[in-house]
Length: 110
Image (tube, rainbow, N blue to C red):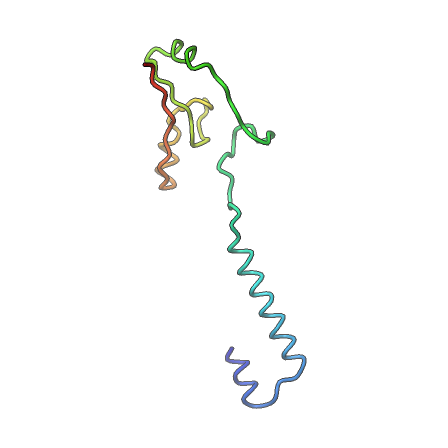
């Protein structure tokens, strides 16, 4: 901006200077636009079923509750569990390192 103000104060602008200023403004606008894109910068899921379009797991609620001694079943929601789709507590380390607050989805036997 200072160079532009100095140049216009000392001599008239020529076509080359105008073209340079326009190109610079367009490049700056493009950088700002693409750096403020709404696309996520990183995947949430970095381990599970990456070759699939969508990761879906099914289970029978009654059978799961019967097989678990406590009757409670915790499903992972942080995508970090080594026992996915079940929770292994990996969200605790994830939350501590990122400041996030994710936790499991817990089903209780009634």
